[in-house]
Each structure stands twice: as structure tokens, then as C-alpha cells.
Length: 340
Image (cartoon, rainbow, N blue to C red; front, side, top):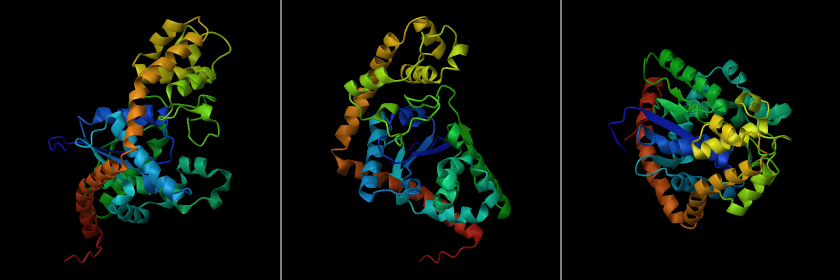
């Protein structure tokens, strides 16, 4: 990695399987552009994945698939560190220390736990409840200065900042942990379901037609976009009217994300038309951008020894940084390592 870069980025994707264009446009595509400006650590957050029950063999395969998706999308293992979270024990070690720093009241305010646990929160895993502490450890073990975040993660980054400040204050070690800044790309919009523009695109949706997978072939993409929900009328002329048409707004966000064309210009291009041409052109741009990535993911998944080697190299690089931080943390807290 280029040592002249002063700022460090940490981000990750859960190996939940069936990565989709929401994951690509909302996270992975942005990771690629960061490589030239930051020291980048991109992890596959397999420890976060087990806050809900996982099939062990599927989890391993999904972890490799995320690694393949990173590389196929343009993340260069020679520029960035690609690794799976559980391979670096310092994440878990620091998370426990943060469990002892974080206040229960802070965690009780986390809305994502309430959303994910739903009405049956008494049966949710404790891991899901303290998930934000592990996320803070992921970030701070590398002393990351910047974190790319979407709207659903802003609250967790605020908690990370609070934890860093409290640790520094509690242990009288001012500036030991940096206070990470969010990277919010205003050109990136949250990608929603193709069937319901008010619901996030998710692999947990029972309908395959709610999302476009990174592994979908061209005919599947065409079929899904053709069936995607739109308005009953034509494309409005003004962007103000799009806001109330959540499904149309979502398709415009997808089109803009893949093409780089501003939404206002797209509206001007298709205003007054029914959605047939718009959908056809949208399918074409998705296929054009995704086809080489899809082919490369499938090719890489046939060479798992290569993916394992990339993850091993990433683990070693990540571990080198993480071990220095956790050693200092043990000394600061007063935990005896007793190393030879």
C-alpha cells in the first residue's frame, strides 16, 4: 500500500449471499474510486453475518463470492487490503473492550436493532444488539479516518465516534483513536426494491423480481426491469413530481448510478413518454456495465485457491496493523499480554 496516503478507509460487505445492484451501487462501486486516494481496508464482515443463523458451508461460499465481487468490480488487491473479518482476531478483542466502554443507553437508541429485531426482540441474539460495538472495532482497529456510509449506517458511525472519544477520555490517551469522518457521496442513492420503492432492495425479499443479482444474466435483467413497478401514467416533466413516485424515482436512481447521467437530464429525455423505452434503455445500461463484472465473478468462483490466497495476503496485511493497535490498547487498559 502507498504509505504517502495519510487517510485510511475501512468498509465492508456482509457475506449474506446473492449480492445485488444495491450492494454494487451503494458500496462496492464507490470502494473502487477510493483506492487512489486512501489506504483502503475492505473486509468481508462474516462475524456480523452470524448475528442471524447461517449455514456454515453457505457462509464460506458467500465469503468467497464477496471477495470475487470486490475483485471483479475493480478493487485491486495490490492497492487495497481485502480480507475476511473473522481472520483478524483483534476485531473481536477490541469489540469486547468496547462492550465495556459503551453505555447501554447508547445501544438502546440504535434504531437498526429495533428494525431488525422487530416485535420479537426478546428472541434476537445479543450479538445483534451489540453489533455496533463490533462495527466500531472494525473501524478503529485500523485507526480509520474515514468511513463510507449510507443513511442506514450514519447512526452507527456516530456511535463509533462517541466510543472513540470516550475511550480516549476514560484512559487519558487523547487522540489515540481518531474520530472517523463519514464519506457521504451525494451522487449515490439508496437502491430500493423493484416491486416496492419504499423498501430497501434486499436478498431476504421472497420475490426474485425485487432485485437484480450481480450474477443475473442479460435475459434475467431485461425480464426483471420489464416487470419493475412504475407509475400508471407517463414520465413526469419535473423532478419535484418524481419524489412522490417512489418506484419511478428508484429506477431513475439506478439509471443515474450506472450511467452517470443526472436524474434531471434523464427526466428531460423521457418526459411525457410511457415507460417502455425508458425501461429498455435502463436494461441496456445495466447489462453493459454488469456483464463483464458478472462474467469475472463466475470465473473467479471457479478458482477458489486464488481467492483464498488473496484473503490470506489481506489477512496478513490487516493483522500487521491490527496487532499493533490491540497491543497498544492492552497496555493502555492494563491487560497483561505476557508475550515472550
